Length: 446
Image (tube, rainbow, N blue to C red; front, side, top):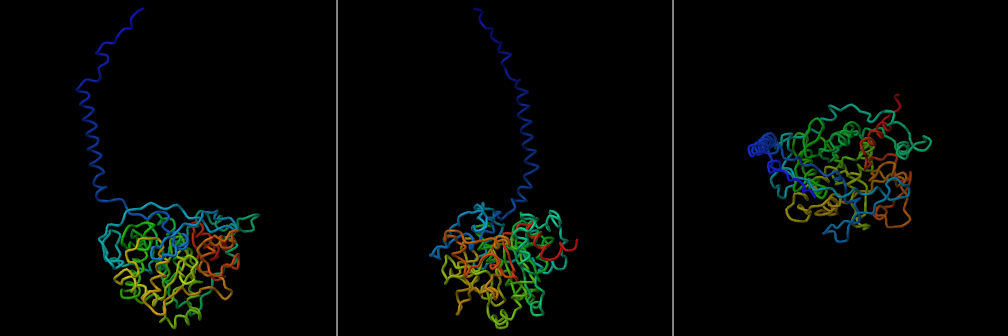
């Protein structure tokens, strides 16, 4: 048998040593060039802090609050099909990631130390009237034809469309015109071009004042960076709201060039829809004027929920948003800035609506509790879900639904909602534009 022929060593040998050295040097030069190009931008522009996409999860919808309120133990409700009639309210999204905190020094017991401008410098004063002065044009995305279409089986109208037919936009009375409202939403940069833009193009410009609290100030979008204690994340919304309310107090209630411009202050997430005319009509009604005793008595308005079903622990749904008058905000601010742990100034949690209610119950006699905002027929004005979902919701077969447990005298179908409803929640940008063009007659002009 012939023995296989061996290759010579010269054929097995790799590239010559000088060539290998040249290759190593080339790779080294490439790395040095990449570092030189990108290192300055990494150093000068650290990763922009953002809020996780699910920042709007709230203490009201997230689930039952345990009986030990001091520990604020919350449980997530079971997930269900959000559109199925007779099913539970929309499911909760997954827990978001923790994100980077804004580059700011410790704040201490005071909730804020002022807003930052677009460059991150302190001392910025937000203009709440900028949106009304320069309102953007409606974009009608994705198209006016699609926004105005009835939809549903045989074109008779889907649930949102039917709610549009049920709820009316009110004509303002002279008294309601005098109820000056600052509408505030909280958001983050990833939602500036979507949710914030939709709110600005639609209902936001119909409020007396509008402000979107974010981690980035952008005057073209009416957003303002108000830093707060701790990380900018879903599980720290309480600190974001503490800082926001304290900033609103210091600049729009006590002091500042806008210190006497507003009587009422509404706050909600960037996925709310507000009908300002209906809100102002209610705030200017005889019922509310009498309840506030001419504005001297604190008033806390929204959709009432019983914490874990306890009628002694009632709070206003953060999802639907809630309203404070000047007297209530002054009281809340005193609680937020009081030294000590009574109002839990360093608590980290997302149940800000539960905490605001707790703070308003403290330190005053009688305590300030959520006011019953139902209309004369017992129908709600502030809603924690979308228009269509409220219209189609029915009690599930079991009684373990948190929504039933938390609600007070819950009604169903068209009896759920006042014809003068003021707010809805979980609104996507296209849904916000659709309800706006329907309610405000843009589908009637061809």
